Image (cartoon, rainbow, N blue to C red):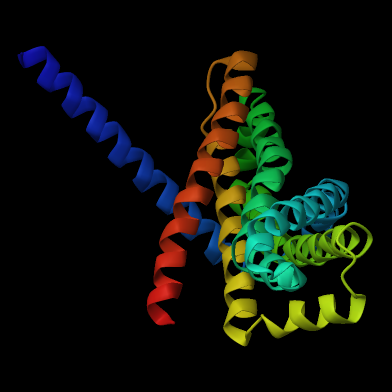
Length: 259
């Protein structure tokens, strides 16, 4: 009984320590964005890697999401004779929930795991220790540029996902359901309100922060050689995906409360 209590106590302490270290890393990376040196070249490089590199993935995600929503929505609306309003369902669903979440999950799979593997490789080969020996702040050099790039590019990719999803829904609505293009696009934009657009940009900004910081934390705390690199990559992917879904739920609750 005593050993079980001790194990539970150690486990809880480990979780608390992890949260504390993660919070310290986030604070240090965020503060690094407001002091010199800026590492602008590194930031632009990571913006290219995250934005342009993930473009094909989010395009596929967006277009097939819109097409599936159009097909399934038509089935649900047909008994009520409201198939012609399918664009309202697509636009609100994509902008409020599906666009930010699906784009973030795709980006987490590509970018988050990539960040973790890069930093983990540097950690096990002692390159980060070499940066410290040279007097360079590894968080400022390695984490902050990735954080700035993620916070900027994930919302941009989400907007692209939303637009492509509406286009995919239009393809099905026009060529399969015979809905007039003017009617489709009019009701698609009519259904959206200003707060929908604002909330649709706040979510991916938070998701970009989560994807980057979880990947950086997993990479910087890697141990155990090449095996540890693989474990950190998997941990970053799984943890960021779970946090994205959890954060989306709580943010949606807050947005609903605010009206």
